[in-house]
Length: 181
Picture 1 (cartoon, rainbow, N blue to C red):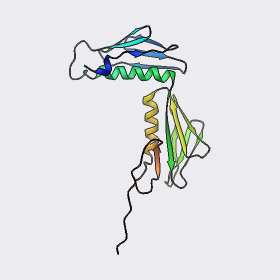
Picture 2 (cartoon, rainbow, N blue to C red):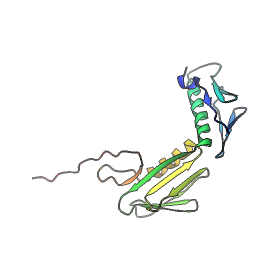
Picture 3 (cartoon, rainbow, N blue to C red):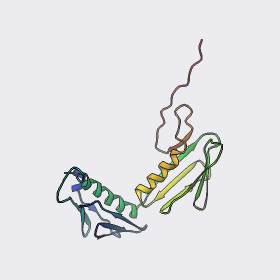
Picture 4 (cartoon, rainbow, N blue to C red):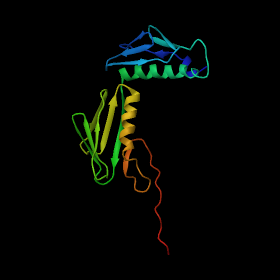
């Protein structure tokens, strides 16, 4: 069995976890999240902690659901308390982003601008320099997916380092071709 799945999830003050069939919901100071649990896995909420119950019959299909469910519940609790954020950097000459309402427009070296509609539950901010983009929200999966979609439009290339990258991402630079002598 999973070592992670056996550990209880600590529920801080101000957060309530409720189970309704296979649906679990978390309410906290920043908002609320709901998630549908995999088949056969349950969560027992008792006071200040939540414990994930393994499936009654373990088989190859549901064996990994214990650790997965525990991680999802822990991410929900952390999301409604602190939230999640990802920072993106646009590096390159003329690379910039602008935000109007829920539409993010990026100029990343193509002949046209990239127009991205920000989904509900995610907040996108662009700083004054127009090269730093912050993606934040309650749902860890949704924040990560939106940041990955924005990065996918123009990944950083290894020769000049131009493109969209995470703030903590390290781009391994390559040397260009040398001229013949």
